[in-house]
Image (cartoon, rainbow, N blue to C red; front, side, top):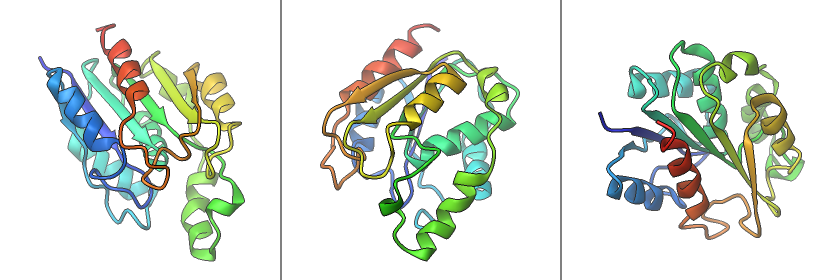
Length: 193
């Protein structure tokens, strides 16, 4: 059975943005079945609708199922894993966050959108039961995500931490169109199965 990868974009993002098309193509070359869905109302992401959308797309997860998330897509994956019972192969998180730099949410509307994602608790113990294979990738100059977020991924999920240099928020603003480290980490995880 083919290994499946679901790539979940971030807030205001799309499957056509930044490094996502490149990663999808690279994984497909290696015979992965890859889906990079458009998440609902990307400019105003809501936990419930994003997790529900991911659940519908994945259908039934198993050890041949892997995830890659960008920014708020990482939280979507974590909150999805909290709700399922099946074990998965693993996940790679790019610029995932549990706190944000204040400048990244300058307007009242931005803060209202971010608030539930920042304040709704996540059951890390449940998530750890889904897989032992987490990698979290950060940039040393991310304008949105403080590097302290890496400690939460490390401590709560026992994730491998990778810190890249000068990649910003790994988005179009930072000009990141390819992300070899995400491909390498996913391939390492997938070889365990």
